[in-house]
Image (cartoon, rainbow, N blue to C red; front, side, top):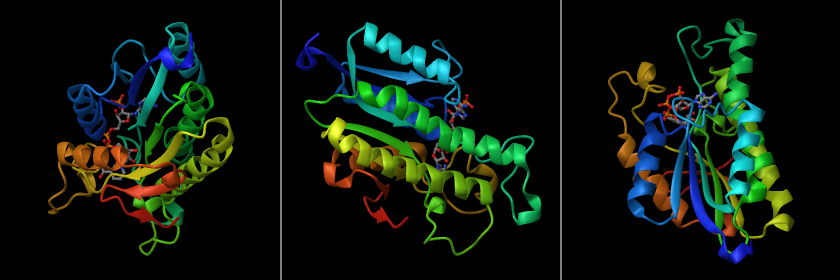
Length: 233
Ligand SMILES: NC(=O)c1ccc[n+]([C@@H]2O[C@H](COP(=O)([O-])OP(=O)(O)OC[C@H]3O[C@@H](n4cnc5c(N)ncnc54)[C@H](OP(=O)(O)O)[C@@H]3O)[C@@H](O)[C@H]2O)c1
């Protein structure tokens, strides 16, 4: 089918999570896209973002249906689970935890770009956005700790930057961004919240979507926060 006639859709990975659910619901209510698909491990199609076959199959389905992606929003991520918490010191390094952090926070993004960036809309603006974190900024690291999470998000930022360079030629309208959502009250942040009042998921989603809506091609490759401020790598 002619590129112009393809239906534009939005994909939200991790819409079972705190921020992902709010982003998904806001996009659905905005009625901006022909269809918004939420992709997760709870409903069909089962998508584990670290499983290349799952992503490949999703890409084949989109090609078969002649759909082009106007917005891909990756809200998946990992910081802790029942077995692991972020490291306080180097002696806490555990390779299983470190690998899992990189698999979800970094490698998954490379797989999503590999299989889905070629399906992004070409004739006008399209956006590949992934939730990163300010703690992934090397120049902003004053506190130390959290080796695996920090390093996996720093590596994600590098992947976003590298893809933005490669796709300047392949798709001049495609913007890649890593987004710091702020400190938001979710399952991921709960154990570290203490007495602080954190942003709600709906509030964060509103701010993040305002950033997304105002992106231009000049923003491609950057880490940007929910206040629309670029964060130094
Ligand atoms: N909350 C904050 O304050 C904060 C701050 C900075 C950055 N971030 C980043 O924002 C993103 C979203 O975080 P959140 O706070 O909304 O966390 P959350 O509520 O724990 O959501 C995490 C999401 O990731 C999904 N996920 C994890 N591993 C997956 C896998 N292998 N395949 C598919 N889905 C997977 C989870 O799916 P299941 O439901 O299947 O587990 C869930 O939907 C993360 O990248 C996080 O690092 C959050």
